[in-house]
Length: 116
Image (cartoon, rainbow, N blue to C red):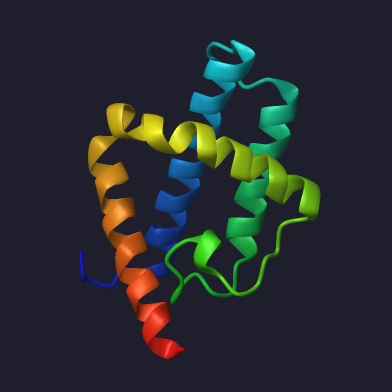
């Protein structure tokens, strides 16, 4: 958990998990099976592009902890809705990733509190 990951690997994993969360949301909210609905496909492409262009990938944990919010307001609202829906459900679909995320989030919050 404390090992540094190559930036490319970190970016790939982040994009995979966000795509999985969007797919989970799309299945649950829009009834999509196999492919994403147009709105969710647009959001997935947008999120992947934001990740590809992120200059903070090396040091950041998650976008929600970033000081710079690069998402347009409407896309930010949509991705937050996806995260609120899919986050708790990830515990059943990808339990290791969900627990890792929770631990990293706690660690990052403690680190940020220490900087103040």
